Length: 315
Length: 49
Ligand code: SF4
Ligand code: SF4
Ligand code: SF4
Image (cartoon, rainbow over all chains, first blue to last red; front, side, top):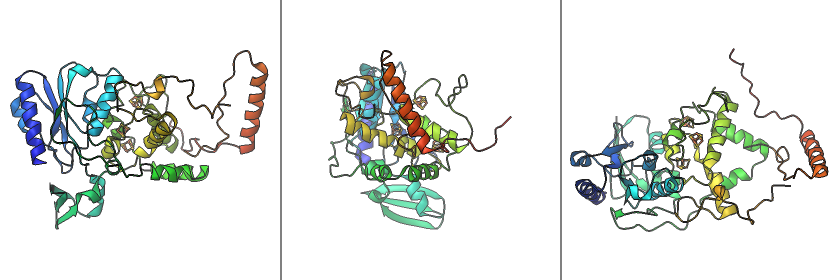
């Protein structure tokens, strides 16, 4: 981790000094543990504040859309896939970004750690795959691999898919993972069971829209949930409105979602919102052989037509 | 999400295929009637004035 950040700083300083970029987007330490913040560094002094550890789960591609400057961006595997998606969707130009690739070893899930202890966690430090957790009356070490974000445990693209600089050697990709075990379980349910399942899943949603705001795909100037003329969806806490918001947002991410987990990470209520986007991700893989954000060469399934597109559902 | 198969139908019908249109509508209406009223996606809480 230490070597990573030294290299990130070195690259960032060089890019700024040579005026290759106007700013660097990276991470700095957050004001609460396990929550690093995005950092926009325009000077070498600001670069000093950059950090890299297992709390960098925010997707930095979220800060790229429609920017005009030249930008150096720190990028994990998933961030790089969302950068590709941004380029495909004309939200940023390829020659505007210098991608500082960071081969990723997974980010930790603060919800999991918080649930393990009764008290507030004051500090989390890490070394050699172990996390040291400190809080009132708590001083204990746990294995990082036990508290990874769920999407990180099944991630098969930890290395950035495009990059101009690399902060470390590429890591070995996970191959032997069952990505869709949870989705298959839901697919096997009866309609009534499904209804119950989602009722329960979304029951605590407070409609703060943190999930949407954290998502790089959600760059619409006016989101459908904010629109009032016409009003596409009710704005209340009513379960029907909540459900409508969630499944419509998921559909807007179809064929685009990289399963980066930023939405789930942002949710203050710990709702597993990825369940919705993951089903669509699975469908895209199975029906269109498509994984989003892997290449600049191909158009995504939802903006192309192929005569052999599956259409069994149309009678 | 818990919407019964049979409540939602998709069809390609050209504007020239009037007979197909009638058939599909009939089938759809029958299938949906067989399922009974849709109790999901109904707002139950009181409307704010
Ligand atoms: S949910 Fe849909 S409308 Fe809202 S920001 Fe995301 S993509 Fe845009
Ligand atoms: S929907 Fe969630 S997992 Fe998918 S790209 Fe957006 S933030 Fe990432
Ligand atoms: S972040 Fe969580 S609580 Fe907020 S709108 Fe999204 S799912 Fe609901």
